[in-house]
Length: 222
Image (cartoon, rainbow, N blue to C red; front, side, top):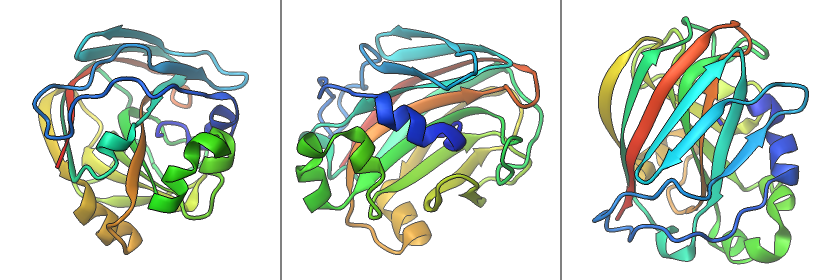
């Protein structure tokens, strides 16, 4: 998400998610990894995900898939996100702008929409919502051959989706905190969109490599 943006329309067409309980956007408690929807991609094997409370782990062997969930209205106005992630084995550096060659260790998708679209989301359905021209996607990425902070256009989402590199390809353990509103303004020219969905992906299919990684203590905060 992101990830395999080349298949985003496919998973959005079939993915449905209930408004699962989410931590208060003040960030006192991490978001639980429980009941997130696993979306495989057509003709591709999926990753092995394990949801365990505040932590998510993934094993990806020449595979790609993601976990996704909707975000309830209580978190629509979140201004920042924070999490801890670690990679024990990862993919080599790639060109994140290249179709069919954009493997990455992990991506955290944050999906945004205008308030009026978010309010109508329950009636629109996921596919129609994500096809809306006003929806925007920020993909916070660990992977690629870039320096921290690089903004890379998605080769699949066009102007609606951008990757922001937080870590180049490699291994280790790090804590992250991102300013969602600042990034929205920098990348898309507006900061008033509602946070309506989250996804986590791992992508090793193009390089035929393997990923062993974790992401946890994910919080949305005001």
